[in-house]
Image (tube, rainbow, N blue to C red):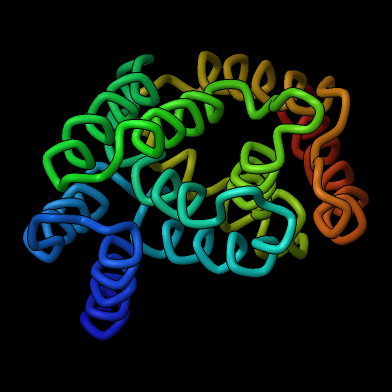
Length: 212
């Protein structure tokens, strides 16, 4: 894990330098990784961050501003408390504070804030290429193998271990129905082709299990 964390820190530092940061990015990168490593997390961990960044790299050709998407990936779950409902809003506010302090241009900071807030619904507007890449990267886990999906679902359940099982099942089922009701789960051509069929199968199977 140490090597992976250091690799993430190297990627963060390079990203901030590319974005013309005027402040040393390393200390804040370490602070972000501390947040991503908090003990209440089981799925929303540095491994999830790394996976989202890798998918962003794969889909970057579709984005209008790939580095803004990468910045949003770093912040999209930087604030994560399973017992609270405003995590995305707090994460977006953290991004604004941190990136402004780092000296990034206001327009790019605003774009990162907008992108982080999109992860509330994962429903970008048609033609929102940056939003499509971020949301596809964040939801790519849904389109994994049945075994990988089962591990993801189990980790999410662990994060909500304080919730009684009947309440969790009802809440989780509502989330799954919301995802299945989206006009499209994936918006980039590559994401649609690679993830749609397995994701819908995984979501449907979990929903049926929860409702049985």
